[in-house]
Length: 444
Image 1 (cartoon, rainbow, N blue to C red):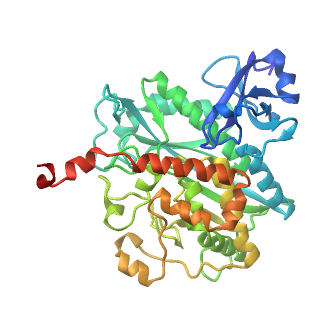
Image 2: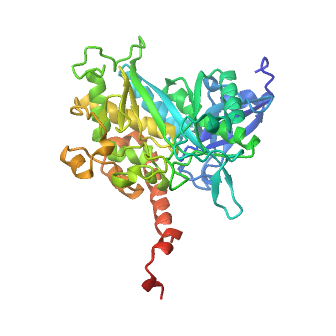
């Protein structure tokens, strides 16, 4: 910290929704937040298992997460774990995720994860609505993905982000204009799941600050526009041996030709067995389900596709599947929402997959070809299940799935309470679409 000129620290944790919360601490009090922590009143936040009478949550910094803040001088961020009365706080998402990872490591496994952090840059209108941030009024193609003019439109933002990521030691290796107008992605190299969750949280913090410098708002909302593709946090992953680092998903002699081991297939089988319940954690907001569509809605974006299959299926290097085999020993799940809490989502996903390994579950043969071209009748005939189409549906599945419940620990009850409240609040709204859709005789 002396070498980096650090004068202040951000002791940062996340709430139930994965939103970063922090206090700023002078560097002279470094040992305080290392040994005791910065105090927070948990009842000021939703889902933290505390009331106004509860003892302070103390956020103790994790030294391994030290990150100089690149958008400001003399400031560093530490991801923190919450303690109450000196004991780990079970409602802390990061603290709980560490216990899930420790259980996996005790079995000899390390969960390695990379993420595709899609997000939009927008501005807010006077009436509260949003529109795409388009500084040169050129991002209007029906298929804007990879367009040079589209990426040049925001080159300053993307370059500043990538430079900052590389400055703090992340291997940021590419960025692009994504499938929707105003949508971008910046990729950085994978790591162990805890590091990736910490980095994804900090990535969202970075986007907010660098976008603000350009007069834009960075949003990781799953689907901010009706007629455009939504934002995912696609995860790329494998299980490694905790001693040797060997990729346990890799088998070049795979009879199915995908380069996957029996363990990898069993892991997929576990994910499939729990996919409907997992959906509530991977896509935890009402809005997420506007992105997970089936039937004609799957082709309902202005670019032609939503690129988010809601089919519980896997295949080869094929983006119409829930799980794509991106390469030998390398799986991608395309259904993870950008709005997820990565600590909860990664923990639930790992637990589901390892349950498949424990039970020897087989996912069946891969689905090859374009699933988008198949009608729902053919999808059903093939025995391919579909993911829940609303938050309410996924919560009902969660209540019936003990493995995903256990993956959340005591957070489960708070999660269900908060998400059911979110659904009720959403369901009571009367939207402009409903008013427009009324037949004339109803209006008389």
